[in-house]
Image 1 (spheres, rainbow, N blue to C red):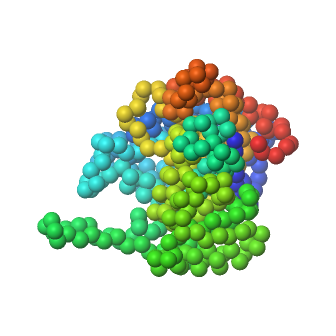
Image 2 (cartoon, rainbow, N blue to C red):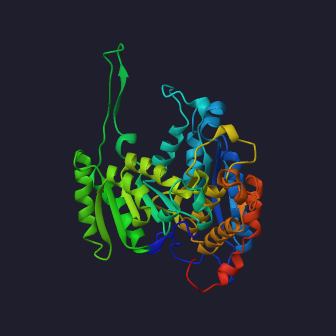
Image 3 (cartoon, rainbow, N blue to C red):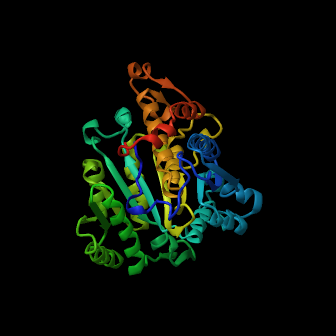
Length: 406
């Protein structure tokens, strides 16, 4: 159950050894942990346990530093993220995040909001690409709202531009009396912003099925017409990768009609936000899927990145030991692969998750709805799922293997 590779050397350590089981110095990776709000602390604790277990088996160390960000930071400091905590993230090899936000801080007119921390992290760390792999585990096909026949061979990677477009552009808030109010958002993109995200998508496609779908609204938007032009120019450097242009509304329809037809989808910020949330339902639960936000900056071990599950903070189930930790655990696997070059440990975690699911271990969100099927599985909570995955973790066998990644 590989959630995302790092083809083309994108996630490899730049020079030198990463200190594998064959010998050499024991490497230590510096991680800033951000528990955040709601179920964030619950699932991040699970992810840390699994990553720690993988490190112990593989012979590498983890230097954790925890910082307070999001709603919890607003309560503690009056800011969603402090400058010194952003600096700590910039100095680390990777950032591991639970979730931020919740109804307590949901006033859209508030001067300080939890999501501002995410914008600060993306902009401050130069994380221009969000990567969301979407796969459907065979044992969970029945949990998806789509027909099982449509879920065969679903393996898409959505590459979302993360630091441009509507979310980062100039805006005018509404003012005036009711009936005369006016608000305005702008949607700018420059060709270099488009080129770097599209190029990343093509690099990733070379390690997959060599197909890129570039999504836009070129029949309406000037920025989309530029996007389509630049995507075509970049494609000329990748004659071995097929490029198709698709309008965003047609893409949204196709994701639920034939999701297996997509390999790598690349698109702008707003479209990527919406499409990736739509695609997440294919897996049967938001709790299943990981994500990574990366840029061009490299550390001594790989790409600096921020890793988090795609779900929100779900404060209604916080602290109840029922949140699904798999999305966070698989985000940890992506962190090991992309930021540390540890494909052995990453693949071992993915294999352990897959085995736990095949063995019938289920958190409440992925329990079968049919009573007869529900009686055949093992219901667990956040901690129980974490322990089931650790019990099936075997990095040493992955390190010794010479075959391809499962």
